[in-house]
Length: 242
Image (cartoon, rainbow, N blue to C red; front, top):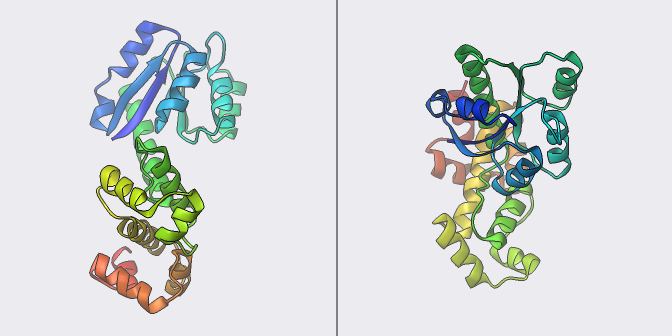
């Protein structure tokens, strides 16, 4: 399920829109809402939804201004602007900032379905490109998994990570077991194999190059690990994905 946050200064409009069953039917779950753009910014940075549906014209901040501030703060989720207005300039500014879509009130089921399908495709691609990072209650573990996902090609080990973050190996092992139900080594192998599979499906890079990108300097070892995980060779996996 993808997490959604809703922002609209009109409570009745907000309630009507976010109660539409099509969200759950398409795999989107409501994790929060706000009638105040300023309050919404704080909540969004805390909850980190996958997508924000926001009205365009609101007191305190417009939808575009709110989106700009969130991006400045480091929020990387998707946005959908909803408005009763058709101001071209506001809509155009939104699109140039990588917004996904612009819905005009009253939103039809067909229009909403089209946008949700686009969102699903974009979020699915984004998740496949960013490894297997999962937010947990542990800041230490979140820092470690974020570091691993962003630097797959580097030579990581439990010892090197412990030195980098000034943590004890036993403590790190307990974090992986308690919050992710796995080990450090198994987690690292999984995100590397996920990345390798994605590159094989979506690029024409040579298998040897992919092995280096995913942190395996030994090509033959990479192929052996890949075969153990996917029950086929990298080349066979690529062929089957066509």
